[in-house]
Every structure is written in structure tokens, then in C-alpha cells.
Length: 169
Image 1 (cartoon, rainbow, N blue to C red):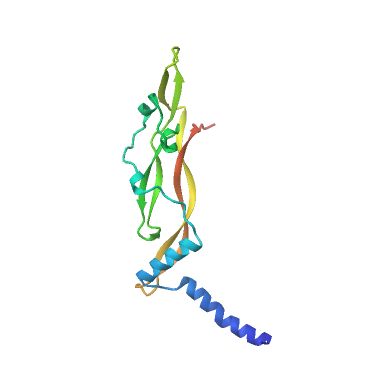
Image 2: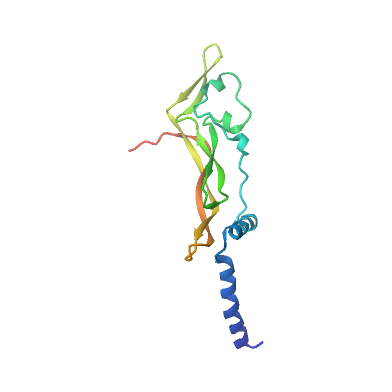
């Protein structure tokens, strides 16, 4: 092949590649393409199973009176629960997000007799730990009937931590 043939070949091939990546697809095709892209290009962090998603939404100070639970999210000084979030136009469409259970942080102090005193202290704040995750967003094509996929970054709370209260100077 001479240079002219290579240029012509490239001019025809490049648009075909970009068209394939951003082409418009029906509902089933876009779902299959999203699963492929997520698996091959945007591996997802495993979410807790739906059975692990909690319903309790209060600061569990009383749990620390005796023996803290096993799971990190429950024995943290800034405990959290998982809630399931659904965004129909995103792939994956459902994911778990952490929600802090306390506004302050759990503080454990000892009395003179050595027994623990557990309380929530508002000298500290429970704050979410954010992680940027890539999702594929389904958007309508100009024909109004088909869709294409667009990678988008979404900040997702993955846990909570204890931090000093912000003070304004």
C-alpha cells in the first residue's frame, strides 16, 4: 500500500470505529453494550448485597455500652448504614451508598470505677467519605427512539469518618 491508499483506508475506517463506540441502539442493545463496557473498561467496586442494606437511621450509642458489633461500619466512631440508590438512566442502575448515622462522633470514656461512658460528642462531625465512580448514562439519540451511552462520574459516599468541627476564622 502506498501513502495515498493508507490515507483513504484510514478516512473510511476511523469514522466506522467512532460510530460503533457512540452509535445509537435500541433498549436491549444499549443494556448489553453497557454490561460489556462496565465489565471491560469500567470495573465496578462490589456493593454490599441488598440484604446488608439497613433500615435503622439513628446514632447507635447504646450498642457501644457493651461490646461493639463486628462490622467496621457499625463499630466505627462514625457509624454508617447503606441505602440503595436507583437511577434508571444509569448503568449500573442501583448501587449502595453510605449514610452517616450520627451528626457527631461516638466518644468512649472511662469512669473512675473503670466502666465505660459512651456518648455522642458534637465536638466532632461524622462526615461521608466520597469516592468518584464511573457510571454509563443512557441518553436519547436525535431520532427520539434509540439511545447511546455516555460515561459520567458520580461522587458516591462509601463510608463515614470522624472529623474535627469546621471553625470559621
